[in-house]
Amino acid sequence: MTTRRKYALIGVLWGLVLLALIPLAWSRWGVPSVNDSLAEVIGPGDYHLTTTSGAAFTEETLKGAPTAIFFGFTHCPEVCPTSLGDIAAFQDELGPEGQIRVFFVTVDPERDQLDQLRDYVSWAPGVEGVSGTPDQVDKAIRAFRIYARKVPLEDGGYTMDHSANILLFDRNGRFFEPIGYQEATERAVEKIRRLNAL
Image 1 (cartoon, rainbow, N blue to C red):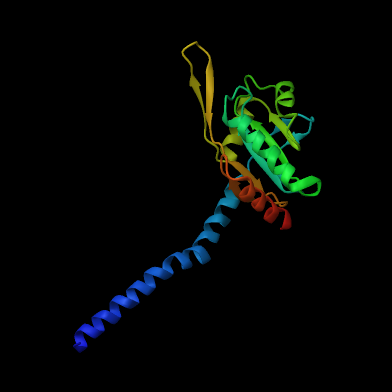
Image 2 (cartoon, one colour):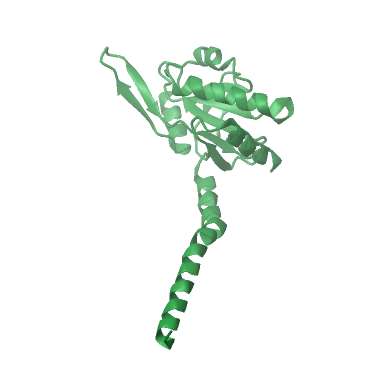
């Protein structure tokens, strides 16, 4: 092998090593900075809603204990009841000592008054409904970076299209990470256990 080819081969090998190190470097230094910036912008805001227990729901409500936030509505045909069922499964797996408080925030304040929300979430352990004026709900939707849109139906009614993630927050009110729609119970419970351990 000529010297020139040898140096070319060494250069190619070093290039492959550097390419292999990119994902490691991103996971070590890039992802935490992305997560840190998300933690700063998801949740804070000047919304003021009311829970089904009569308490205020504000930015301060996120502080004091690990918390899960889910946005939905009581006329939801599939995503919301499925997610509430998933939350009930998480709580069951976590047991009485590890359960997390959960707030189900409506994206449909025109129809979801507190009484309807209370009935809707009553069967899921640790879940409180949250509603308010359309203006305040809109503020919360923006603060939590949620997608929500009214979709007209042919019969003159409407449904809501909305984000389906469950958002986890630590006891300081900082965004931790999401639980995806229909994420495996084992993975979701592992995230909540890590959150509870902080």
